Image 1: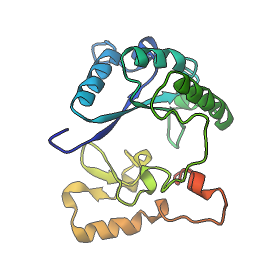
Image 2: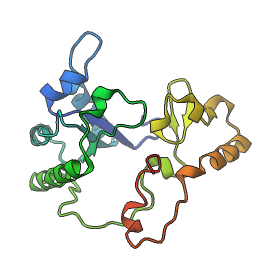
Image 3: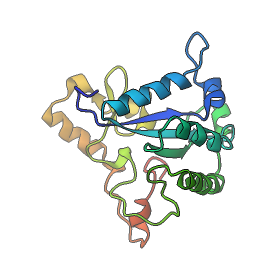
Image 4: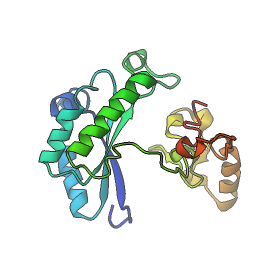
Length: 210
C-alpha cells in the first residue's frame, strides 16, 4: 500500500473480540479480530493512518465500551473511531433488516459512543458535537470517487455493488471520453442543492435513500 501511495485506510470491526469473531470468521471457523488488529498496527508503523469503523446493529450496540477498552489497551487511541449504523437498503436479507437500529435509536447510541471516546482520549472524538461544514456527504456524492468490485465493474455508490443494472461500466473499458459519459450518468448523486439553512451540516444526507 505504501508503494501504491495509499495513505489512509478504513477498517471495520464488529465489536470486541467475542462479538466480532461471532460473525467475522475465516472459512475454517477461526475469528479475525486479532489478525485485523495486527494489520492495523503494521499499517500505522508504515505511516498509513487508519480509521476504525464499527458497524452498529441491535446485536452489538452495547459492546462499544468494551471495544474502546480493547483499542485503548492496544495503543490505538490515535485512530479515528467511526460508529456507523447498518442500514437496510433494498434487497437486503430480512435478518439484517430486523437488527437495524432506527434513526432515533442510533442517534442516542452515537452520542453515548462519542462521549466514551472523549473520556478515553481517542483522537477527534467529536464530543461535545458541534456543527461542522461538510463539502459532501459521502463517497457517493464526491465527483472523483467510485466503487469498484472484484471483477472491475464500476459503481458510483458502494450500495450499488452487485446490481449490474447500476454499473457504470468496467474499468478495463475506461477512456477519458468514457469517464465524461459516466460523470453525466452519475449526476443523481451529485449537485443537489436546497434552500435550507442547515444544509451545510448534512449536505442533504444519503443520495441513495433520498
